[in-house]
Image (cartoon, rainbow, N blue to C red):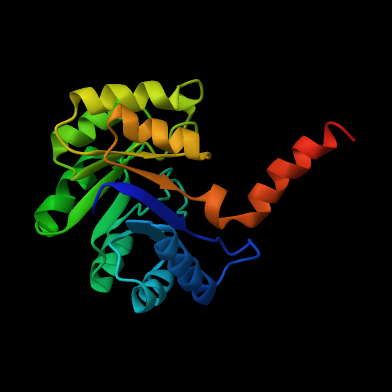
Length: 214
């Protein structure tokens, strides 16, 4: 994975652009715009994207289980499926909600696979770094109870200073200015999703702003 902009091409089943075909076209657009990598959800989307762009992919599978809080690649069932796609990097939930034993076992089962830790706090990021994750991502800041009042730039800056492994800025870096700031602070790369590939979200931002002055 080169340094720069990674574009997250995802659409959940309830979203209007949910389609592996559409995500493949999104990836082409990201490539044309200068992206150095893609983040994608599901084996179907990954396989479609790989047909069209020769960029490294951070692969995930979002799956909810009863009595399990993590939903980003939460078990080996999802990890195994992603490995079969040949995806370059697999991202997993590495917050305090995920058992350390599971995180450690990833490297024993797949020693040649690169893994990214999706975390939400400095402490979680440092744990992932010590466990040996190839990349530490700030993906879940603001999405966990322990990170509700956390400043993403403060977490990012601290992890960049203390982690041995590359830190990737992800999670609500919604403007070019914020993305550039992340790189200036020393982030290896920055992942942008909603602001690029979820038009219903961007439309809502504009709608809310316009509605205030109507």
